[in-house]
Length: 109
Image (cartoon, rainbow, N blue to C red):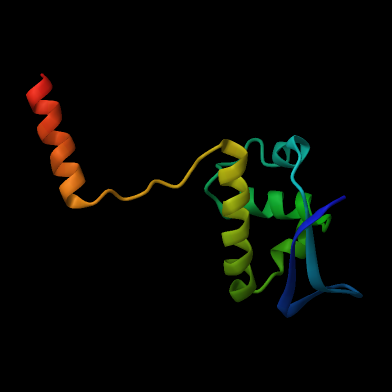
């Protein structure tokens, strides 16, 4: 599968005899998002499930990721969520543009 994001852990994760130093995330498929069903989407649990699905690592490994690494990974997962749901970032309009829009709306009503 196509890798879209690679991340080298600053703090490697060891569970049992296995140590993980890098996570490779493949291009998301709908099946990956199905792993988050039943979870609130803005939670660590949903991100943990998605991280596991995209990296191929079991959730027990994902649960042991250091908080400093997790913060960076969650930013990348957030971008994936936004693309999946088709959400685009809103651009802040300048105060003058907002005032003009409100004035035009009042004049037209």
